[in-house]
Image (cartoon, rainbow, N blue to C red; front, side, top):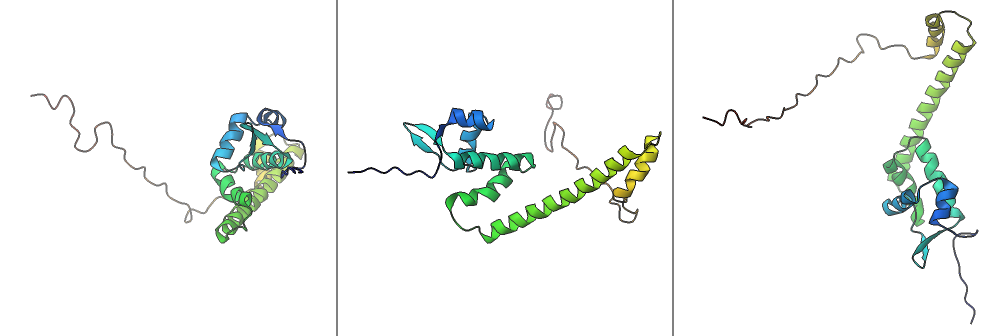
Length: 173
């Protein structure tokens, strides 16, 4: 009788401590990511988690998403469907399109800011305001008065004494 053991990973397996050291992610975060569905359930041997190369790549993807400003919820909604081998749903496609449009918007803003900073840096003006005027070519024009939004009034908060509350002083005869 020949026993064949198969694993999704192609490289040597590592325990959670080694995964934590190699990735720089605390073991508690790895456990939490697994608990909330960001990370696939990991094979356990004698009760200990064992990670393969694909898990290390997954950690890299999650770290990249975090560095790009994705929230845990966005990351879970965008990357968790890939964990179960199913084709992405139309809802997932829509979420991905929204995030891609947001990334494109931020890229355009960053390009404009880079140009503005390079303009200011290369200018030899003594007055920073003059340099700022040159950099303003790269920034959006302020909204016209007719398009400017008026500040919304702040909602009134009920103090400690909400409607119908009776203070200790007023309850005395």
